[in-house]
Image (cartoon, rainbow, N blue to C red):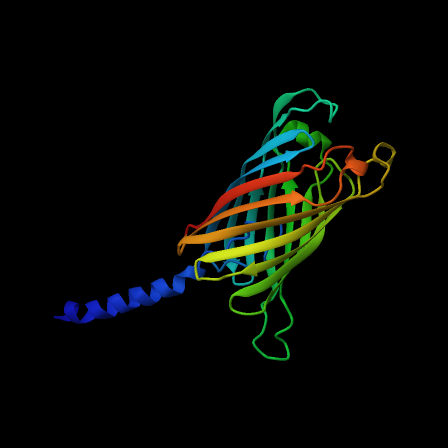
Length: 276
């Protein structure tokens, strides 16, 4: 008798839970920029994907780009990222290297994202974006990498304005240190995000990279500014699983700087899974 009375309540609770769960998985991927959302305490999320790129005679496939995120508190999460690449140089006349295959390991990045301001519903404060700070340090994974690696890491400020319940603007800027360069490079992105349905998401993004370490005697410039444009789609196949597909290209004329064709294009796909 008691079970028969509790059964309808359990069904209702299950339905309410299902309606509330589509927002459970909130990945940083896809796109080059990173959103300010921080995982709740105890949440574990795995985000991974493959990306194929063609640039100046180089075909490269990221195998794969992987991020593990763990929620420490409603305002802080731990992060671990890795993105090694398998490549093939096939135009030795464009780049002074022989045609060859290679695997390029990257440092293992470990860091944190901290929520500084979660936004407000008050009308006078609604214009202030959600703000987070992300900082990571890169650890060398090979002895050769450790020899040449003065420092690797990044620090970024992340912002997001929710304009409506289906449209938001996210943007970020920061500095990053690659393993072979003593000076930081700089990064900035701007993304327009659309949610036409509860499951389908669309975005278009511009991001910019400023390289301050390339030799001006070789390139004729002390700083290289690269401008990219990408766009993509996400789909929530399950409240805890989101798939993504995206593509992009370099929309800056590279010939006078890198002495190569304007052919930096890439295509990627991935998945984000909230494990618990």
